[in-house]
Image (cartoon, rainbow, N blue to C red; front, side, top):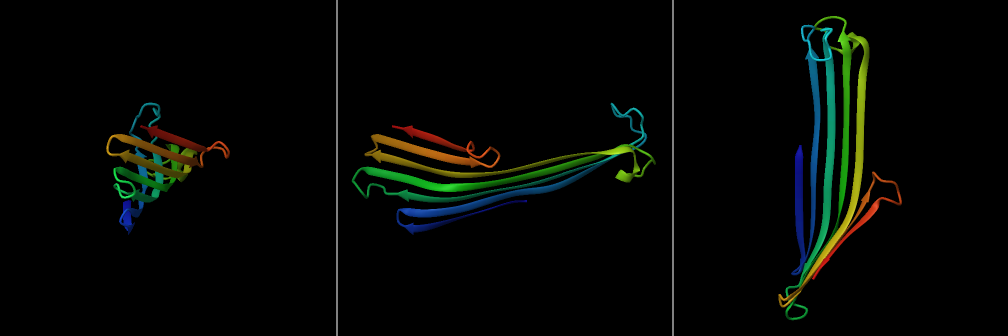
Length: 172
């Protein structure tokens, strides 16, 4: 499933707010039935196998942005365009993989028919990133231009006290 929306509201002639969000999610289950007659590399006993691979993903990105444009209205020849806002990204991924270790009875594909103990592998990943960002573009009579930008990211996957980063940018 993929979904998104965006809303923009003009507060005044030169000020607007925008909110948007996007979601991506999927749930997949893959099964594999290997018959006794199969001789794949590394499984030469030809006793069949049964496998299940389950994967789940959920990701959401939500932004809120306030934007200002003056177009020379404060001082003739001075144009200002600026925005400030934030983003919240949530990510969750989970997978589990289970396989028999050869089958006892041909053509009976389930985990209770495993000749040896079933092998199970799990993986779980969660992350949240909180971001604040902004920029300002200032131009005087289209001859002198100053651009400033900055972004702060706070990551849930790093230790507290070492999980906040700032990315500045400036040009003239």
